[in-house]
Amino acid sequence: MSAKPCNILCIEDEDEIRTTIAEVLEDEGYAVSTAANGRDGLALAIEQRPDLIICDIFMPHLDGFAVCREFHAANAGNEHVPFIFLSALPQDDAMLKRQRVVFDAYLTKPVDFDDLLAKIAVLT
Image (cartoon, rainbow, N blue to C red; front, top):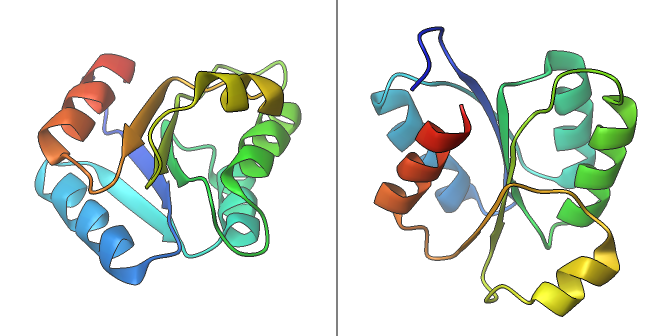
């Protein structure tokens, strides 16, 4: 982890998953904000400019692809914020390419927390 405190935003519509991710990350010393849907998550991401975003793909109000695209558009010209997608589906590179999103990692559910923590350590 970087020397400065790392602020992470977790956007996940499933309460249990969102809460567990936040608890695990907080236990590791990260500051965590959460949102239960894409619309609220995008608003928090733009307002807070976290150091890293973890985002489910399939959510109500705004899916993860739209959150990613809109956040990058709003953040254009600023320092890159790493983006980790979560999904119950295995990574489909062709589908991701069609979505035209820029992201740094893709993890499948159920979340492997050792893998998640390793990815965060590399990206922050």
